[in-house]
Length: 98
Image 1 (cartoon, helix red, strand yellow):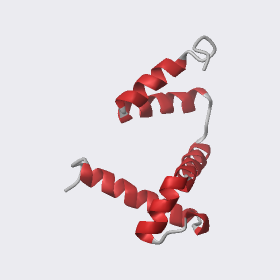
Image 2 (cartoon, rainbow, N blue to C red):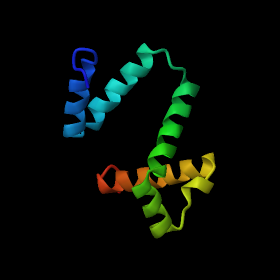
Image 3 (cartoon, helix red, strand yellow):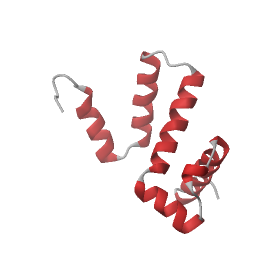
């Protein structure tokens, strides 16, 4: 990518390499605010992002193999339930809950 045309890419690459979720979240919130996204637009964006991530080949196969979940058949509630389960696992794994 053209660093002159997209100067923010260096910061994004640094954030990705460091996996600093707080810094990534701050940048995302800044970008959403600067672009005037409404709360319902943000909700739709985050939902569709999760659906796309779950639909990626490796994730789709893992969900099917380990949990017999076909992501293509899930509606909004199903996608959100999978997201909630993943979040709960993340919180436990990182000692945010006991």
